[in-house]
Length: 545
Image 1 (cartoon, helix red, strand yellow):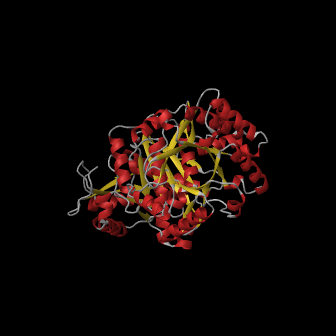
Image 2: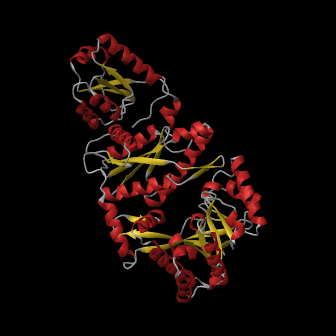
Image 3: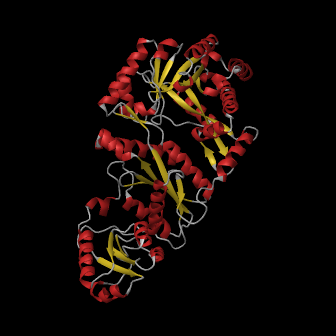
């Protein structure tokens, strides 16, 4: 689709399913549609039959304006106008003079559209494509005959309260953080060729082409909502948003405008609902709830079928950049849904009371693989996440000893990462358990520090070695004065307690420089490396030596 010219706009009007009153005015305002149209308005009559919205599917070009004619007494026509993303609405009865005035208004609208909407196609805040750019990309796919196109429209909830409480600048920072998360997630799960766009305020569009099943797409949407709901630290406060999503597969002969309209309409329905957080924008079964039960059943067999895989995310010295170790991360390579990340994997395990068994299996796999690292890598530490269920088990110490013995991994190179929530309920019991682990020469790290209780009491009460700063704490350290002060205070506290600090989620050189200036010892993040498959991790380390 051609971009809009900066001058001398050509205006075209296409009439769809018009009633008698509109036909009377047609000769005075209509022109011929052809393949060189730059600006045009689609006029759709919904006041008698809201199903006429389907006529938009046949358009080969995306309208730059849509005038919907509605009946103010007919709720279906109002909903249909919203569903087709109408830019202008006029209610019956309509006089010829009123219609001509509306046409002049639309011409003025097309003449005076901001340059950013006509020629940029990018959102100035996040750098992602905006609604116009996304529409162009989708339309290009559809004009190229690609029918295996799926999309997700993800809408943040309670976002307005952030702007109210912290101001629009903080709201912008939150949107940037969410956009970065979504882009990284899509790159990892779908691929870099997928489309990620920001649709104005709080909505994001994700679209992909290729052989994807409905159940796979619904699962990807569920993972996306889980990611978006993870906490973000703003102005020293932990912000937790939730999100809803609408899903759709492109219909035959559908254009981008209609496709996006269906997604927008379904998202509004999902936002109004109190239970269902994912809504399909068609008449097929919305929830497809059986996929959850299937996954829970499949998880019970995943270990025996060798579907649980380990990847290693390198950890680096802030001072000189050398690799000092790696955190072991788990993923599930499902035969239908593809790669399932750790967050969803453990959420499913928790629902099936499978967490302890799964965690034990993951720890054994990671230690077995780390024990086989080449001689030049035997100085590297291995970090394992430990769940609350494992710590609560009276057999945990015995199980860990057995795993170390069977795998042949040196306990002196092992770091166990434990979340605050797993310790805070029973400090005395935790102190006893961690003291026993220290006797094995195992190191202890508090994971995701800064997003949970952040109770400094246990820092002095428990035998610890590291604090891991959550990515929400490090994300804005290079730009936010408050965030930097908070991180500085945490690092200073850790140093006074003789604890070392590992920063997660480091993605930019500015973040790394700021952490170095504050005295942080170690970091991990996409700046240097994502989580790598075992063979790729070994190659990466050897290439760095």
